[in-house]
Image 1: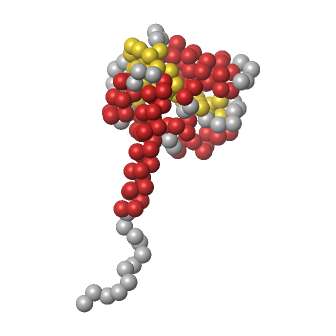
Image 2: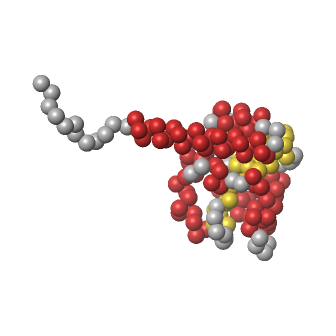
Image 3: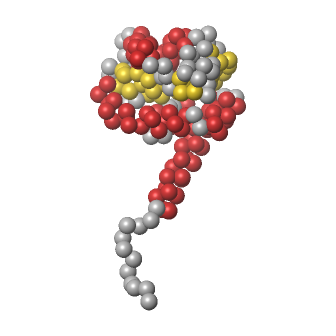
Length: 176
């Protein structure tokens, strides 16, 4: 799963100011509510993020967090990316403050289809080169460009790996 399959330019925020994890979740909920157009969407989204966070901290380390939540309905998963102007205390396992947040909200009826992609997304999200570029970005458009470029490079790398893998078919002919 690519970052750009979850994100849209409208769900990216650059240089956002927030004082706490709770305030970040409230901001994510407002952004998602704009996409969902459902009654009580903002409160529903906040509740699903907050409830999931109680099960375990979503800090990935290195100043990055990936909160997740299940939406009661919706047609597709929604990703929200926030680059904070100043890092916040996130109670992350590595004790580092967080300034890059990639939230993933998936409709309940689609969770089984997407749960398998979350570990790879998390692994890619803590890539040091990607984080450096995301922190240096000065606009939401630049952030979108960073994710687009990263997804393209990942796709090319996967294709190259597939081409380089040995064939399982036996070679024809005999050696003398």
